[in-house]
Length: 422
Ligand code: NIG
Ligand code: FE
Image 1 (tube, rainbow, N blue to C red):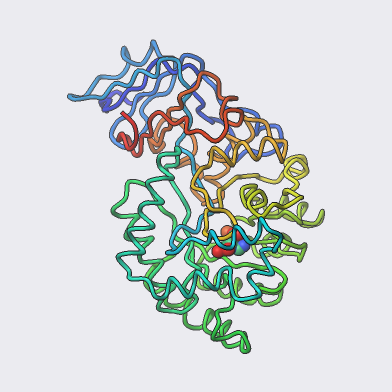
Image 2 (image 1 turned 30 degrees about the horizontal axis):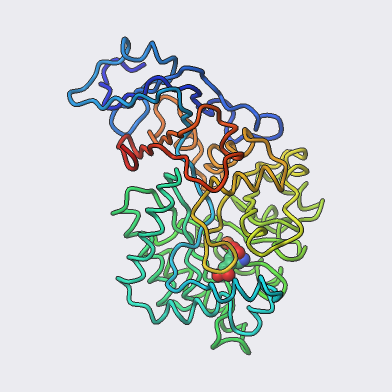
């Protein structure tokens, strides 16, 4: 331990301290290793982790700074702060009418094709005042935090014009400055073809490549570029063209791929060296092999399958067996998955995709860090890493998928500061 730094926060008597120390990211059997310390403790200095080890050793080792906060975890579970690597939190109106239509038999694509879906959120967002949109987004961030999240990736994609895409990205960047959560901005201008270009999609693609991407890069508004590659949205060839342009402009890549049909999105993501490919319910065997080889992270979104009443979930076990890096996310959005709760996603991953609790926790910590290109900074509790920590009101980590639909978060520490709980 660094003897020069004084502890500003100590957590002691942690029944199960899940450090996730070890390989990062984790594949195959490594996903079962939580780096677990029983009766553990953590000392934090400022924004960083100073010491991780047995509880009884902390106080003797770290000199305490004046006003050092001491949290007695009383035998509870502690994990790294959760990372949600795929969200669409900047929207105005919710779409409960469509949800009800789906429960009564309409499909997501039928609703989209008749003008609902993403395009209805676009019409609405364009009319919503900046401050109103920002306030609604902030409320969603507060909810993410209350469910144990400390970092989230956040996409645009409900503007689909230069002006409205920038409006969304500015909100994400401003909230990253003012809100305690860390946000990672992603440009998703290729989420859908907007109403005004339905009969001239070529022009819209041209605008994405020649106007939107350069503007986003010039003002440093996004770190990633994403696309909805799907039958009826953007084809493989269109996706290759747009994403190659984004890559050439210096953006890192993400894909919405093989969500509703197998179109080769997973393969394309691997081919272009994308950081992640997400959804992947219908990924082909070749796609799985290609992603394992390229190290493209599979971000699986079982909440979306659940909320669309899908019969088939992404083939998580097969991907883990083949050595793909698997992460999990809420996909929080007003259409296909309206939830800010990663814990419920962990339950769905266990029940529907047969992940163990340990694998699912790996998928929302160290592997989710890989999905946002933050390995070595967050997602693990190791000396020198960011002090993002979630304390859970449970004695055994396996309660996380098992005790579903209730909030078991006791405290959240963000960059060494108490951000939620007492
Ligand atoms: O990840 N698949 C595309 N985009 C979102 C849905 C967005 C919406 O319906 O508003 C998703 O599921
Ligand atoms: Fe999504």
